Image 1 (cartoon, rainbow, N blue to C red):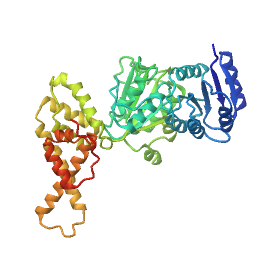
Image 2 (cartoon, one colour; image 1 turned 180 degrees about the vertical axis):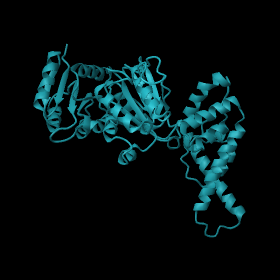
Image 3 (spheres, rainbow, N blue to C red; image 1 turned 60 degrees about the vertical axis):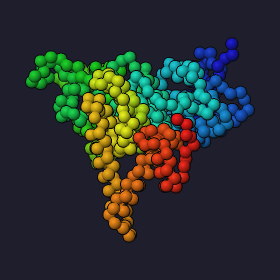
Image 4 (cartoon, rainbow, N blue to C red; image 1 turned 90 degrees about the vertical axis):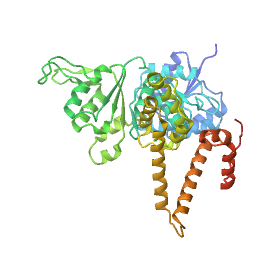
Length: 463
């Protein structure tokens, strides 16, 4: 049987020697390489290895540049990045290019062997990617058809197997908890607890006891021992939601837990050790809070190892139909079995700005299922759209506007064109399907398009 070969690319001679020796002892054919240029020359003149271990910082280049050159050469051998704490952002960029995994120095040899086995079992495709873009929907409730969201989920899925902290940012209701659960489901801790704490929901004293627990007699009313969320999440994942609202004293204690894996219950005399993967989420500008001294800089750097910035729903409208289907199926059995979302309401959903994001959509779906009168919802959406039209009219120079009737007619025409354009984009240019969604006849839609003399990216009339 042919030996599996490994190229170890690292400029530190002792570390390179250690890895090559250890891997050779496990039956791998190993080659140590010092620089990125040496690696490229080796790949050009010799056979392609089974896997490449690539340090992020090299004397002649960085991991991103080397990774890009490897892929440009058409070489699809799996690459595992080796990184110090300070270069993780570079690693994330390399993973976008198709890196199989990354390990943070110092790491256990067993972790390296696991990463190698995993990478060899699931080699990348010819384009360097490891998964095709498709609508994601799994047991965590993560649903998307948006390319940017799929790239973010791919990064989260890859780093989920490690224990590095993840910081998830985004507007309220955008799906931060869902993304955190997605990371948990795809981690080695998926069969252990997932525990959430809302740091903004309680005052400092209660939050401290909620996180770290207390001993009997620690304060008035503490009649029994109580484990905190860190203990309840031991072996699993702890989501610290709204981390930006945490007090300075608790920030210091949290930093200690992240560094040492230990904490002390209120009233206790000895430390408790836990093994918890921490994910933090916030809807505030945490960098601004750091600059103002409201959030510890050292804690921010400790949490901000992998950063995931979730876009608002209005910037990923292609997700709206899939989210509607998911939420309808989630709640229909409980509230209104067999209910269907009317096409008119779905169109309104697609065109609505969703200031409350997915949480607001979820509330509207539940409201529709409990009280299936979609006309009242349509009135709300139309009112919001009219408000946007009014703002557009106020901000547009009038010149010679003509009569108020003419101004109103032009505004209505612009709004109608915008709605039709969006629906055509959603249907991929299928005019018959767009007509059905707009609840107008196909001929009427054609007449409108002809009147507007719109450039038509419309390639299909198939039903």
